[in-house]
Length: 162
Image 1: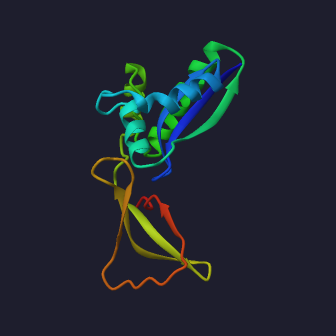
Image 2: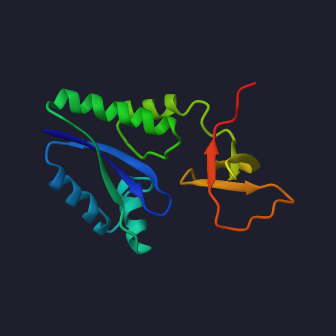
């Protein structure tokens, strides 16, 4: 059996890596101890893990799919890289094929999204949402004159095409 998995930044709840393995327990352990390297390469999964550990956080590792063959696993990994990149997750996958999938999938990503608050079941526009400068999360901009008193839920929705 082969497992496709993703690693999530617990601070932002965004995925930053998708992988596949035939030994999930071993691979999970490798990822969780990768931060111990003295100087991991900048921009890599290991650097991200080291930063998380330094700040006292543990990355979340999620099983996305389990398949029976290596070929199916590689297809699964590619499919998930493409899907998560299209949703705006800042993936650090290094394979050239993954980099191309990420680049292609993010065409159009990065545009502003609408921030709506649901009050009594009715959606009201309160601002916008856009990726932050490091593409590690999203910045919510609340329009001038909007007063927010919690609790509340903000749904991040793509703008309606005109």
